Image (spheres, one colour):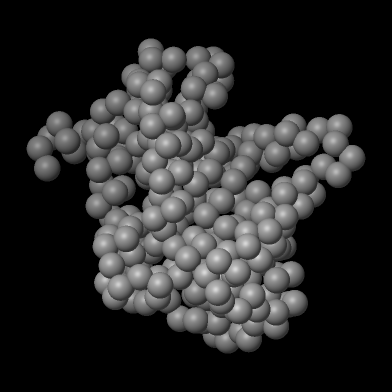
Amino acid sequence: MTNSVMEQFSRGVADVGEGIASWRVWWMLGRNDIGRRYRRSKVGQLWLTLSMGAMVFGMGFVYATLFKVDIASYLPYVATGLVFWGLIATALTESCSAFIDNEAIIKQVALGRFTYILRMMARNLIVLAHNAIIIVIVLVIIQVPQNWSLLMLIPGMLLVIVNLGWIGYVLAIIGARFRDIPQIVQSAVQILFFVSPVIFRPSQLPTNHPVILFNPIAWMLEVLREPMLGVWPSAFAYTALIVMMVVGWAFALVFAGRYAQRVVYWL
């Protein structure tokens, strides 16, 4: 790396470090986002679980009929797929406006830019915790056998969160500069839903199909879904996510080191 790139990398690392160190701030803001969304609602945050539950059972029965598969084997698959897809899709779309939504704070308080990415991630992890109840209910009702593969959910979740972190960081900076980015990403996410194994199984496609082999969403879903279904994820999925994490963060830190401080002028 040249001196200029190293300086940008160092600034990016410092910004991320400052954001992580401000964990009380982004955790409090993330919790407040959820509480404010359902303020004065009699059901409150339970709406998160109810709406996801309706989608899981509705789509589960419909697509089990369309695909002509046994509902008992398909419902756990679609439940895990929709719940974890919700985390991935929402993180991608909300990242684009992470700085825009925090414009007032950014212009008045000196916090690391990455703080606002962590706020967004905290909010979505709280939503995931609510929706995970649906997965547990389905697994218990269907009586899906569990084994030691369930422990692989921990490294899988960490890999997904860390990768969503650098992607969100880059999208937030670009989104602050170009206001069309949120709409573009939202449209792209809608397409990704249909080309990713959220509601269909990879086995329904030819072996090593590009939609599965070169799709980061497919890798993320595999390391999150398979452990909960009693299946060991493939080494390929973990390797691909690790490579994606290393390369992605190297790029994101240099990119943020160069452009993150300009965000305040773009808002």
